[in-house]
Length: 247
Image 1 (spheres, rainbow, N blue to C red):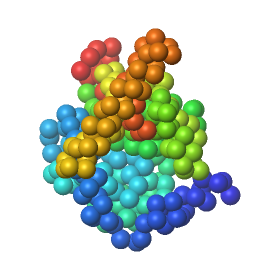
Image 2 (tube, rainbow, N blue to C red):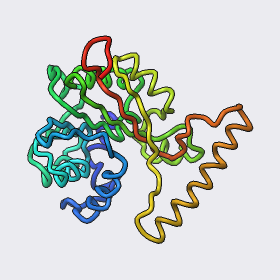
Image 3 (tube, rainbow, N blue to C red):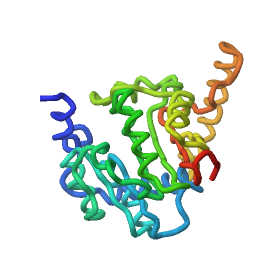
Image 4 (cartoon, rainbow, N blue to C red):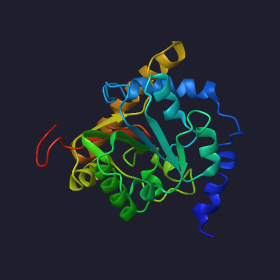
């Protein structure tokens, strides 16, 4: 049996230590962060058609539901994960993301593909991003997240999950996104932010550490790098509203 299939069969119970009940308290904590990290990237229309690829236990779906979005759906290869996500919304499918996207031309206004790129081979990454570009309506947005190979701590994320295949940098994923037809490619760090005393201290300390990381790059290679220093980062890319044009 394929090793990934063996792991995905017990992904929630073994790799995520999840029980059979959706953890709403934990999801609320993630939702607070999502509100900050996705600011300005969500569609204004609450009936927008939104797909969450590799939706996992449904944290992003929960966030979207709390934000008032009514037309949300997800897909994940792990039956355990889908069982949890269906406690958020029934519109969740067990399946391979590439197979799910087949035939869905210009259907979605927003596609989330968080923590999935690193589980794919390079050829599969190209196939998935092309399928997302095809499935998005003109002007639609794709939001990705991935471990960041530019981070000095990237190995913790790259090798912390046995199903991870690759690790990318902002420049590498930007090139691929543009090749398959996206534009307006932007990046955001997934770092600490101030929402209390402890988090405020972490935010200040991170700002100092981040400055030293950029200085390290400046000394070694002559420029500060992408400026994306966190272990994980977000990527936003937009499908042009017309062929050959900007949104």
